Amino acid sequence: MATQETRTSTDLPPVAASYNGVDRNAFLFGFTPQAEIWNGRLAAIGFLAYLLWDLAGYSVLRDVLHLIG
Image 1 (spheres, rainbow, N blue to C red):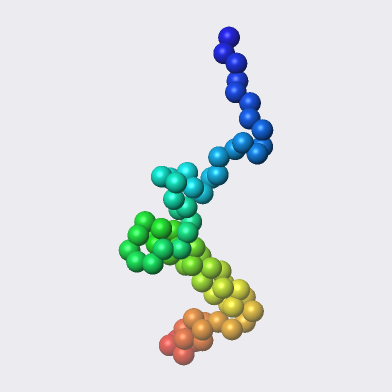
Image 2: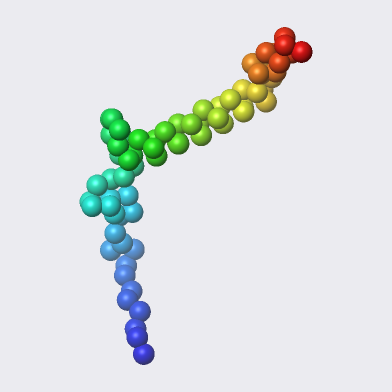
């Protein structure tokens, strides 16, 4: 029977630096693969901020549609 390898919690490898020893979550300037990760994160923050702004009653889209129709 095969035995399972056990490791202590301090012996675990770091998650972020698992790709060629480079932190994939670090901020790098320019057209890099990490730019897509940051672009998605900032877009999600902006979308959430607009939803909260709309729920608070300051809807720009509703005002524009009210002017048109």
